[in-house]
Length: 289
Image 1 (cartoon, rainbow, N blue to C red):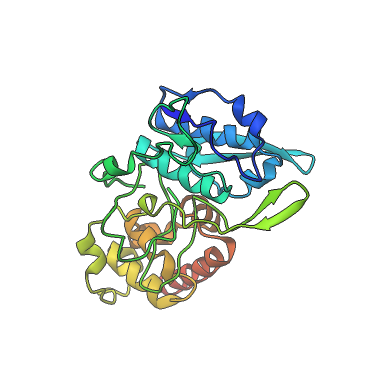
Image 2 (cartoon, one colour; image 1 turned 90 degrees about the horizontal axis):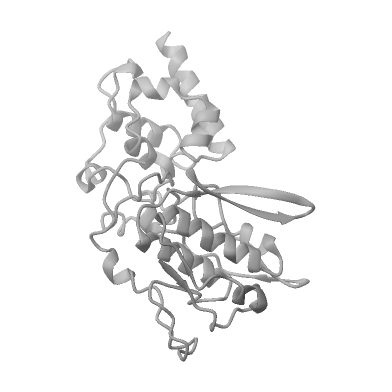
């Protein structure tokens, strides 16, 4: 279960009366469902639902949340999560952006506890060892020093940090303005989920020296040779995304099959980098055939 601390300072973005109407706890249920209930609760409690919705980016395969603003209903998928620890980290960073910290806890909230002394997010001490490396969120803004410490949460697709020092977000938080009534206050968006954006490859594969492809036929390239090609083709635009090709085990044959819509949907690249990648793939095909 995740417990709702209704004694906290709800800040400028959440309506205290609506927060008081939230259930005392969420779950027991699957972590993905608990995450959906908590995020939807924040949206429903906001003075302006857009304030919460615009802090989130599209996930893959998780539960859906909705918000109504600008005269329309907007839907968004959250990432798939398999641990309460990850749910708590996600909510901690969301609430920090909303200036309403300690709203959620993994411990029951004592009636006499104050917002400053409430126990929240104790799962951090249990998280080490819980997260297991798998294939496939988000994620996102992870520096290369941390890359070897955490593994990816199942279902996560986030682009990786890279030696180029740039990072992209497929899942997590967008840098966004946080709304308060008619005023718009710029909030610092947290670096979202370093634990959700680790390569499923072992650290040794990350640190290995890359070598140019041994064959001129791209269909015979290994995953590491594809990674070398991506880095060499456009270090600035494509270099930050090379870990995705390791993570999804994209060898030469798979590289030649990639299309722009697949690249954007499954690898999380934006349109610009996706088109640049397609350009380099087309050049490979011309040389091959």
